[in-house]
Length: 160
Ligand SMILES: [Cu+2]
Picture (cartoon, rainbow, N blue to C red):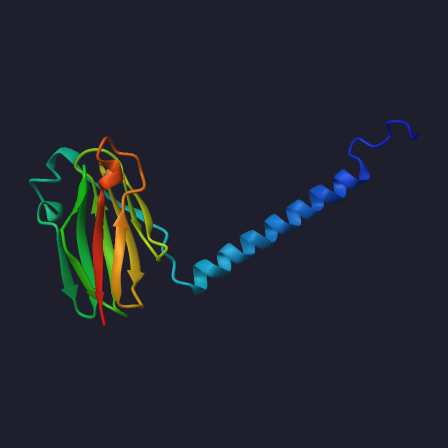
């Protein structure tokens, strides 16, 4: 038996180096995917007074607007649903969602896409996406928001 010469055992050292190498690979891969696969990281676009969301400004009139070849959607995520009730887009055209909440935090998760936004009262979240496949997409709240949370769902329709 060797004495306690090595603070880090040889095998443990190899394991740590292997782990760090894998993490480096993941970080490079994440960077590559962000640059090439359409970055859908939501960003905080603005601050807003949550008590005035329902009465003032763009979110008091939740809607989908067509701007040239793109869409802009102003969405309220509230307890327990989404406004506008109906969101329709054309496949292949970029959609920019602006989302906020008049009450508590909500999720804005569109199934079969990587749109997955935390909606925080007082903030406007912004995320862009281009739906490629026509069809109906389920929109679900994946942040616990109270007793109606499990029923907080909606649909997005993408036309060909
Ligand atoms: Cu919710």
